[in-house]
Amino acid sequence: MQRGLMEKAKTKHLQHTLYKNEQWLKMQYLELKKTCLDISHICNCHYRTIHSWLIRHNIPRRQGGWETMPKEQKLLRSQWAKIHHALLVESASNQIHTLESRRKHGLAIKGDRHWNWQGGKSESINLLRGSLDYRLLRLTIFNRDNFTCQVCGRRGGQLIMHHIIPVSINIGVTLHDTNTITVCKSCHAKIHRGQNGFESLQSKEDSRDAG
Image (cartoon, rainbow, N blue to C red; front, side, top):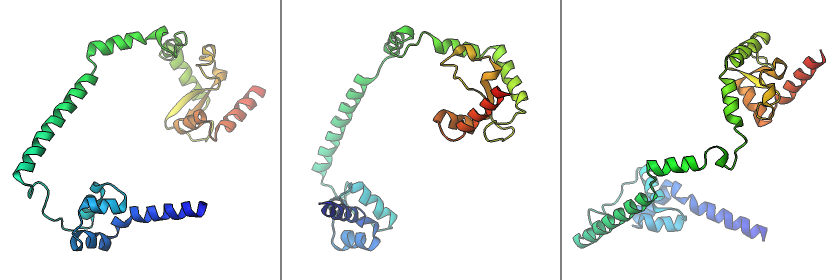
């Protein structure tokens, strides 16, 4: 059964990539006079894919489409296009929210009415991070660590004052110098993704606490 599935997948892959062969595509289109739609059925893909590969292979396209279409058919297609466009416009207008409706929706989920409301914690943290004490602590920590990332050892660049115990867990440790350390932007991202660098940071903090 597994072998049958593999063979079926292989056949499907070969069909799907036939149009990438310039000679094959040229034979199908120019010699056998097949349309893009006919070839797309063979290759199990969209007819626009065939059209784009005709252009990529510099295969001259046959005259057809709108230029050779009878007037009656052109008229019918034009009328259909106008109706289709009107339906799209109507559908879109029903989905557009006015400024007033968006304002009401925003108020309806603001603050303690939001499902993820945690007592205004974010507002308090943002106010604290914008304070003078926070900015002075940031400069103090950078000077203490000699403007060097405590994970990778790189000096300078985009530095961040990282909190060992996250502020979101305990806002009381935001301004504690023992809870902060200098890291570069790259290592800071790795720490929060739980990648390598976190163990090194933890070991530095443990040695500092022991000292």
